[in-house]
Length: 232
Image 1 (cartoon, rainbow, N blue to C red):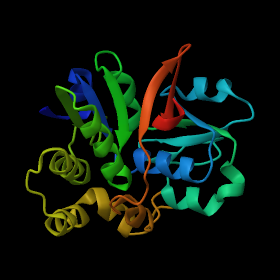
Image 2 (image 1 turned 90 degrees about the vertical axis):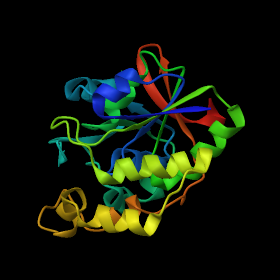
Image 3 (image 1 turned 45 degrees about the vertical axis):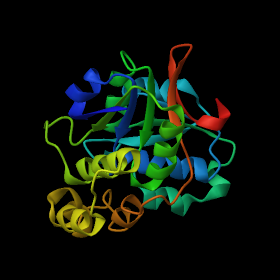
Image 4 (image 1 turned 120 degrees about the vertical axis):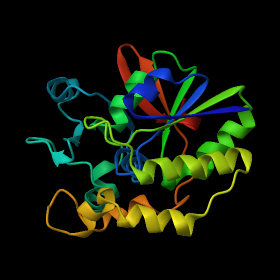
């Protein structure tokens, strides 16, 4: 198994084989949580206005550059998702827009054989699925901050963790957490001065393997839908 380590939107465009699109803060922590709470399906779409037209009964969730989108039901916060609870999500369709994770997913689908989405919260399940398939090539794409073309430690270290799960290369989660929590990518949550960045999001996002959930993006009649693998 050859592992390609890639970053940002440019890396997503280069992804081949099975691609794992990583967005720890926060899109691909949110999607496993929404399925955990009973969502029926998740459509990913980057165009805000198109999101509004897909399903009038669906849940609109997402952000632009981290900030909640006016008129959407939810932002991109694991904390707010958990607060809404199962009664809110069960059986419902979610239309999800994010600046980095969704962008990378859509870009990777052009050339990768299969596109999975994930973060720390479902890393073990995702990598177990890949090991069972034993592909020739796996592309691990750490999305970082796409608009600014800046890599982020949480996505890069999550990539390290997934590579460890796939191949046994060294990984030290204590050291990783020290670097992640001292970086601005986590500090913007920990300061607690912006309502769209709840402090608690860091806790949900940095928990390893909390959910046994493998998510795969597929193109279905022009809509890109992220589904749990067992439901495809």
